[in-house]
Amino acid sequence: MKLWVSALLMAWFGVLSCVQAEFFTSIGHMTDLIYAEKELVQSLKEYILVEEAKLSKIKSWANKMEALTSKSAADAEGYLAHPVNAYKLVKRLNTDWPALEDLVLQDSAAGFIANLSVQRQFFPTDEDEIGAAKALMRLQDTYRLDPDTISRGELPGTKYQAMLSVDDCFGMGRSAYNEGDYYHTVLWMEQVLKQLDAGEEATTTKSQVLDYLSYAVFQLGDLHRALELTRRLLSLDPSHERAGGNLRYFEQLLEEEREKMLSNQTEAELATPEGIYERPVDYLPERDVYESLCRGEGVKLTPRRQKRLFCRYHHGNRAPQLLIAPFKEEDEWDSPHIVRYYDVMSDEEIERIKEIAKPKLARATVRDPKTGVLTVASYRVSKSSWLEEDDDPVVARVNRRMQHITGLTVKTAELLQVANYGVGGQYEPHFDFSRNDERHTFKHLGTGNRVATFLNYMSDVEAGGATVFPDLGAAIWPKKGTAVFWYNLMRSGEGDYRTRHAACPVLVGCKWVSNKWFHERGQEFLRPCGSTEVD
Image (tube, rainbow, N blue to C red):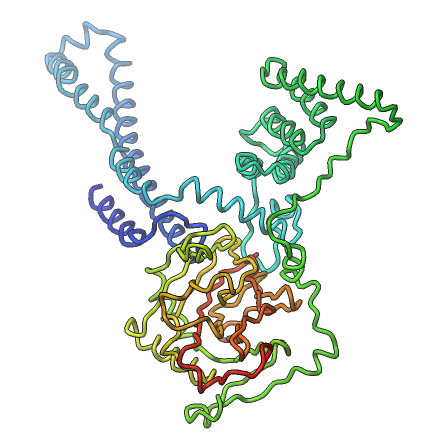
């Protein structure tokens, strides 16, 4: 028993010692949880085997004693007339029954519980559960999926069947409610009712659902439906105190509304809305355009523009390393010029870089434009790590390759950043360069602004995960081993605001990327300045 507990603890510490919650931000780290859960199942089965062995012994003893006492009780004096029987009775009650008591009192679960208690410190937290729930809602909004589709697990490109139970859907709705997101609360609580009405068994009751749902629709301004749902709740649970209070409050508000309408001599009818609610407007002005592009809609790749896009062999301004083996280059967009290179990284290089990066992965941050301090943000859901050339020869090799392809020096570039996206992982529209009001963002580096971005796709993505440019109407889809490149600054040094881009939420799959940000210093003769502001 002690051996398997120790082995399991060592495995857990080895796998999770570098992970501090926020599992939902990286599928790569979440894979560790799969193996950890498998270990937990194994330890549970070990406990069951020990418990079953103990129960088998107790059962055997009980059967033996049942047969013996049936015989002895039938003729107690005659049975005890034999001195051996008398001795054995005394011995059993003085020695054997206490031994059985010790066996019954043995806590076979102690090892498993102690093991589980230690491991719980590495389990996902409430933050992870809320983050994962928000991720599903983000996918629901971005890709226009209704809760029923998500509940049935009918997503494109999936290899495994996965469904949400009534209790799972209730958890989704409750997470939204606790975050003050009444729009999604209504959608998921209605899905709970739908599955309950279909006869699905659950610990969640209709009363619980109606309690959340009635208040959520009230918060969305639907007083009539809130009143109707509250009455349904009271019909199921007449003693529900909060529902009784809400009913009186809703009726009072409705009466005030009627009186107000009558005083205004309005003939409008107090019709009950149909229960269809608008998604609230949020902080992102280009939300609709961004999400449309993520779905592959609204791409402005007109036939005229498409005629200006070509494929060619690229030798990096006749770099000696590429003269014999040039890269295949494909235009993705004409202005600003965005290109894709093929076979930039081999599968072996990709796996090695992932292997090096994974232990270093930490929640991806953004730089606060006012303070310059790095901080986490809800609009960037991924984990990243920074790799130096000394970490492994493959890192140095990939850096040299990017330098040869772009014709820019990596001496003043940032370290190679490797990112792995989590559940519904995304990075909403942003600029890679610092704007005029953020001039101090890269001051500590002393290398100027980010002049260009080189983005390596290190995995295919079954659905979602595109790189989109809302101002352009462009969408670029991940292809393993390829890379895309664009300039963030014009030759004048002014930022090219058309390069505002985003990483769409990953709908199905595990997205890995790496990128290199080239800076201005050192590029003076490699990419000379232009003579006008728009060069």
